[in-house]
Length: 292
Image 1 (tube, rainbow, N blue to C red):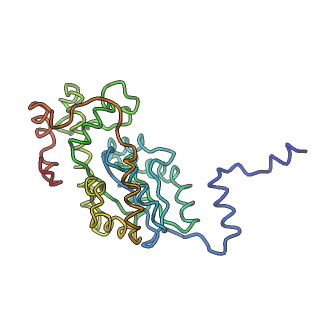
Image 2 (cartoon, helix red, strand yellow):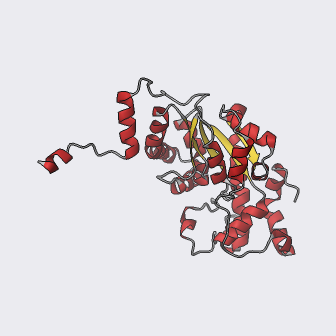
Image 3 (cartoon, rainbow, N blue to C red):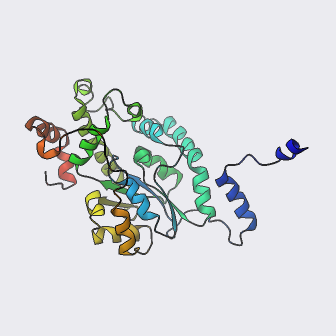
């Protein structure tokens, strides 16, 4: 009898169970869709730019639920989107996959009458797919100096051939000018290419959507609590700016800062390394207005 009673308990995750119970007992119906006061926002970046810090800052807002790396993770889907961007069937499949992997989180946010924010770089190359699934979605391009991103990638072993995460990291498509040379590139050159290609891709994508759906900020300004940058971040999600004390408490923590791995500070980079940086990334560096 005991086991028979257990069998009638619905097979739901805690979040799904909350969603079902909320609908039954709440006097306030769920939001039908994301809107200006409860926006859906995805952050696009290379990674190693402070995306966890941004997610934590956004947790201070009352009108959104903010996540850094929610599961299921999207890295593999993002790489497929980059690889098969011109394949209409592939894009249709990716739309269904994205809808499936984020349906529970979206529904939970709407049930809570909140917007949804995801800051991890894992969704970056899925941006066109996200736009199809959530047409009024907003995007933040979070940019960091290439010296810092490349150094962090080198310390983490990106493209070293032994990093398990490399299987979901992008490589040049056949139409790229870097395709033929890729196998001969050093690990350093590959990390420089990743910074340049990812930021270029984001810039080109954002140029296709209305200005009110996009925002570009630098990690440097965010980390330094630049007033205008903070105001832009919170006005972008239609939230008031939290107190200076709360913001500074988060920024002091240096969340997910790189603490292991050895690679020289960029002041100690060789002339050859600097030549490779500019040879691969000079156009992107100029577009993003880094004085390097």
